[in-house]
Image (cartoon, rainbow, N blue to C red; front, side, top):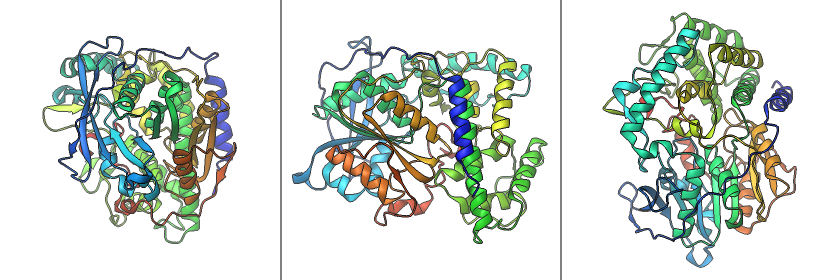
Length: 515
């Protein structure tokens, strides 16, 4: 396969030119002063788990003010005599449901981890069962195409987002301006107290790592263990965010092409995959490409989405079959839904993208600035052109405040932290975890999986055992530890054969029609 090291080097170069010159002061805001209890009862959707709610302030600077109920779920430790405490989990997003992650915990975590911990998840404020951020469908469905081609497109977005945010704020209420990861970290500390834990044990994936990072900053003395898998980099401005994401999805696509060139089971084996891919993008740009299962005309953005989604597992067989299908070949064994944003049915649309907007400053002055950033992405990613996730979200952040401004992390606690990432992650680049580990200091250990995909826990026995040992025994591996590909944990992730390698869940980057 084509080497990814040149792309990693490019990522370092990109970061070097866009990182802020100095770290921001850590936010030390208000926390919970009382340990509210949770009334547990069997979950209606999954009776083997318990559900409840935790009431927290909408605005943590006003702890006696209006409240919001946070939905919580848990599965008790399977061996009470060996129980260590509670392990709080978050599956990422923004927009992922920790409640549903608990429902699926038996297929996602080792028997040993389930034996030693109550597995606890929560829907972050503004998400799912925790007072989701909502907008009128009639307004949401007026959304312009998210890839802008002119100043007129930029102006249209500028006008639309003023209407959108006013509508969503009216629909959602005061919570609309209090959904940043710092707010969620304070909720997480209230949850820790309600669970009766002196210190927090936490495992977060993807956007869930940002919640963990903010917790480490805000409550350094209350950390028992933070296992952060496939990390966000909260120091990035918009230029660094877009460029490193473009490098990541291009690298992942390169790995897919390399696999298909070597593996005769790939339906495109022996063909010029890059030429076919380019042809599909150009057809979509001309309005000539139709998604066969729906008859819907595809945009180039929707074509590019496949490069990201198909590499998250990764699920290279499905990706090759989809590309072949779009090029006139046979229908895939499993047909993914049409990716990207689309119109929603019903009265309301959920908009967890607001969480991203509050955590990252993705606002741009004009189309000239936008076009310059796109040219950089196009140069860094000649096949994929740009990363579809942030490009689909970026315009929505116009005219909306960033309440948790990007900054270099500061962790002053004593507990060691474990960060992990694959070398070829299409969603959260390895460089993000490396940079986050550097910012967190000597107590943060970076574990590198020399493989592919998004989330490393469960992919091979090596890193799964390391995460388990850390969460259970607080032992971290030596700095620079790497796990090779090829030690599959046969007993783990029994549900993953059913299609979760191709994400089509409630995350903000999935098309509304797939939710």
